[in-house]
Image (tube, rainbow, N blue to C red):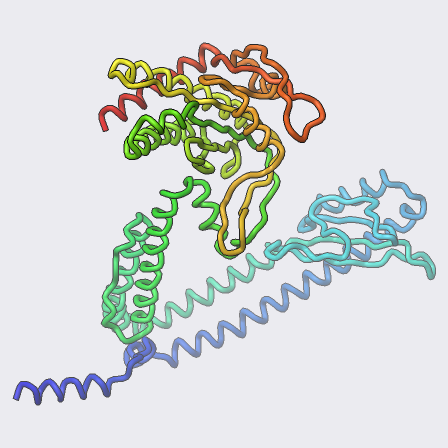
Amino acid sequence: MGSFFTRVRSGVVSRLPRHIPVAYKLGAIISLLLVGSMALLGAVILEQQRALLRAQMDTFGHSAVVQLAESSKELVLADDGLALEALIVNLVGSGAVLGAAVQDRSGRVLARAGRVPAGTQALAPGADAAVYRESIRFRDMTLGTAMVTLSQAGERRAVAATLRSILFTTLAVSLLGGAAAFAVGRHLSRPLHRLVEATRAIGAGDYHHRLPEARRDELGHLMRAFNRMALGLQEKSQVEGALSRYVSDGVAREILSNLDRLGLGGRQVEASVVFADMAGFTRLAETLPPDRVAGLLNTYFTYVSHIARHYRGSIDKFMGDGVMLVFGVTEDDPDHRFHAIASGVMLQSLVARLNRLRQAAGEPPVQFRVGVNSGPMLAGNMGAEDRLQYTVVGDAVNLAARLMAAAGPGEVLAPRDLCRHGDVRHRVRVQAHRDIPVRGKAEPVPTCRVAGLAPTCRQAMEARLTRLLGEETAA
């Protein structure tokens, strides 16, 4: 018996339509005749009002541009630009005229004021204006073109006022069926409230929120579409979270916001780059087990990541015992030059603090070499078609790597021009250093050794280091 009722219920459900339009649910309650008649009448009135206003506006616009063409005829012949400017300024200052211009027959603008399209182009979509043109003629010769731009705001306000009147009248007539419609509206508003709550949850980052899909009408389709969207956002969030573990947050945002343009190539940027590697790493790796070497690198690279974020930079790549940082690439940073140098100084100061702890624990000290440079470089996807890496390349990048190789343990080297830059020189302390020959350059590169930061900047850096070491110790 139970299976019989189950089959009957399944058969009834299978014969139900898969889509029940909302119009069918409202058809038995709301008087379609009243509402439809009022809507039709309102549409006719509204269209007549719009046509009348448009005709009036066209008449005014043609009159204004013809008058401008006639008034500017002699001025164009005399090439009297000052009088043309005065004529147009007076015209633009009147009523609904948003702009006006006079061009010669070659298209050169002789005088203009207000909003006027360039050449023969139209105004941008949504400009809420109309342009009227008229040739400036003297006898049988065309001297140029007059243009007048009129605002459509008055027309739109009049149409909106008419529409409001029609809607108010329709609403008053529709009150005949309002009582029943209210009851049905309350019934239909429940899923809408669920949609609003679900939308707020998604906006707050709760991508696990889902809606029931039991309805078989338009709202049911909307709920299913919403659930598919929430699932897609959840998957994208998971991908972004995983991606940000392998690349910097800025690079992850750059990649995810341009998924339709994932190809080789990039854009020219003015940015800064820092190269740092561990001096004597080969000897250190020979004396320590592999797991301790990996742990040592992970510890220092974690600190480097904190330093880069503090100075608005990002890690471009890890290279064995070295790291490459970029500043002003994935986000605009007008102070990227100082931030790059300060990150190198902060790294050396942090390494000095950690070395005191390591020596107290009987462990060998660790030292870094740092090279900094700034200049134009290409930022974008590099590599092969099937394997890309977002990075920066260019002569400025190569020079930073050469400076790192020339730096001694514990040193931060930078080109002399960078140290003397207006954004940098008052905030760093530098020492003269030798000119370094660089492969591919005809002349050696003058360099300087960055000894530290100015007192105010140094205090802020040391305070941040204290908090960072405290946070890491607590963690």
